Image 1 (cartoon, one colour):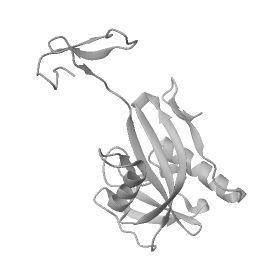
Image 2 (tube, rainbow, N blue to C red):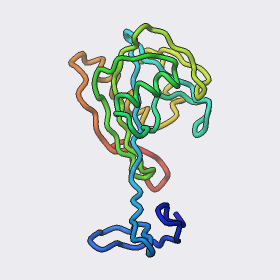
Image 3 (spheres, one colour):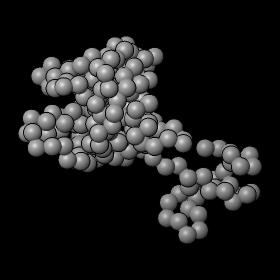
Image 4 (cartoon, rainbow, N blue to C red):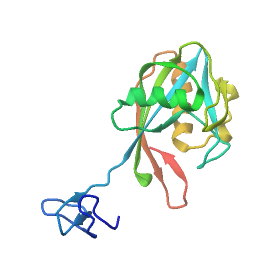
Length: 186
């Protein structure tokens, strides 16, 4: 950040009074510009014993499979964002069941909130951000072609819970980058 969005003056990086972290601060109007993690809301669209995935038509990870998810918009709830992203990316309407996974990804400043959702009518079609969409059983999932570590971790836990038949407890954790650029869930 170079300029204040309030008055247009240059900003400096410093620790404001009463704070403990560096922030961009305008010395002219004293506005503190906070930069906080972004919320990614998404869905595990369920249809019987299968889940709906989308093959990405955009970067990052063009051509790889993912759950429908994306950044929340102002003025919407996390459930609304998950339903909107599912409709935009997979042309599918879902009824949200419950929050299934909450993952922090500190190295990219994101928090993922993934809901279980039932497809309303089984209909789906790729949106602008998807090359194709398909329903997968656990045994047929393209595990080596999943776009993001958080999607891999979520689907592993989801199908583990589904096979146990004892419900879907809230899954939580951190997706962390290690020195060798590997990413793993904790």
